[in-house]
Length: 210
Ligand code: SF4
Image (cartoon, rainbow, N blue to C red):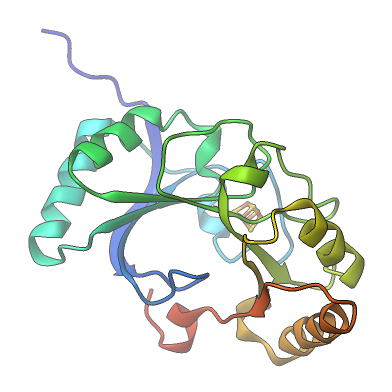
């Protein structure tokens, strides 16, 4: 019998709560895929941009099952790096079969759409490019309020994404200057009649979880 080939480059698998976006605070298992096509200055998961361990889907699934014995979270978040650089369709299928809800956090640059429950699309500088099909698929649009983020960028994205899709301005690592920048942008958005934009925090950093 042929053994399954390791096809996924994985940085880590761990239980926590979702620290970002609209699902903030919800118990979630994280599967962090290694590798990224971008090099954002503010990246807080640099360790996952390269490296990782080649693993089979079965071994990832077994680890998820094992964690769920002690932490039966209903959600799995596939994150990175950039998770859509790898073919995660089989893994998504397996996780759904387990009865889990699946979230994918993506920078939106890779044109690969999967039947998941929640897409967090987080376009990145400098051009904040994303694949068109994420306009409809995104459940939320998350923007890091780094120095590169301007009112003009937020305005463009607010106009491009459906109005019912919430847009989140996330201060860089909860830092005060970044929060101020986000507030300034939010203020201008309000004055110009742009709605469904909100400020957020990185909860795991506030509470010092991982
Ligand atoms: S897209 Fe995300 S993982 Fe990739 S470099 Fe930017 S912040 Fe880091």
